[in-house]
Image (tube, rainbow, N blue to C red; front, side, top):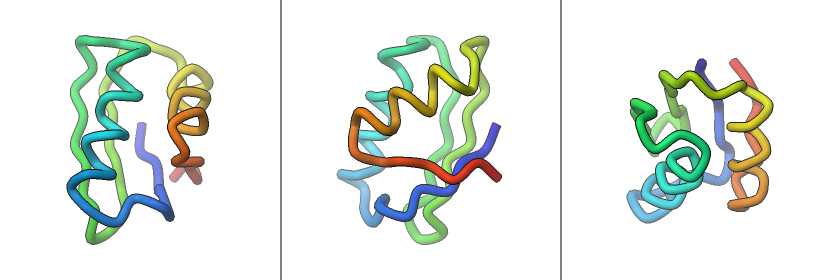
Length: 64
């Protein structure tokens, strides 16, 4: 699944996003790209769980 995170501007933001996703699925494969504000997630967790974790971390996503 892929998300657009308007508030992800830098590497620090990307680390926070990664930690939020890993709190739901520690084995998730995550690719963050701050310049395009995209994050790609390969996980067995539901998209709802990932969206909730991202919102709670302060990065509400737009699903692509």
